[in-house]
Length: 116
Image 1 (spheres, helix red, strand yellow):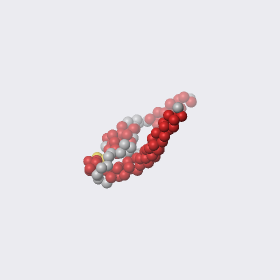
Image 2 (cartoon, rainbow, N blue to C red; image 1 turned 120 degrees about the vertical axis):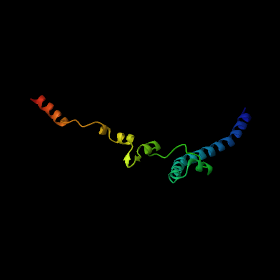
Image 3 (cartoon, one colour; image 1 turned 135 degrees about the horizontal axis):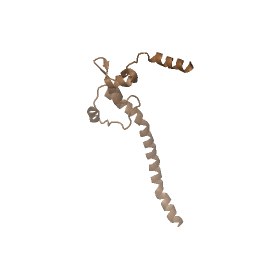
Image 4 (cartoon, rainbow, N blue to C red; image 1 turned 90 degrees about the vertical axis):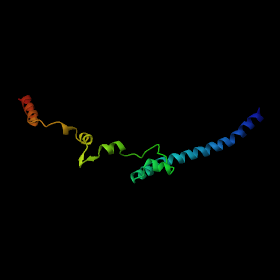
């Protein structure tokens, strides 16, 4: 029984060594995810297309750098110098509600009636 156990332990040593190396490499790879995503986004911002980057061997990163998403950048674009409708509405929720005349005096009057 001891001989069997010793053979099992001996056979596991190379596996444990490979597992330790594999774990270390996976940690190193994970540490590169964020800088890779930023470098990829920077390349796109400089004019490189996804197709061109793919030809260079760069795959689209799993994790993009934090910040404004492409969708929010698109909705914030201006059309003919004016914000797009979606961006303008999102910027000012009260921009589409007309001001009511006497609104300030109505609340003041209501307050005065309550105290009278």
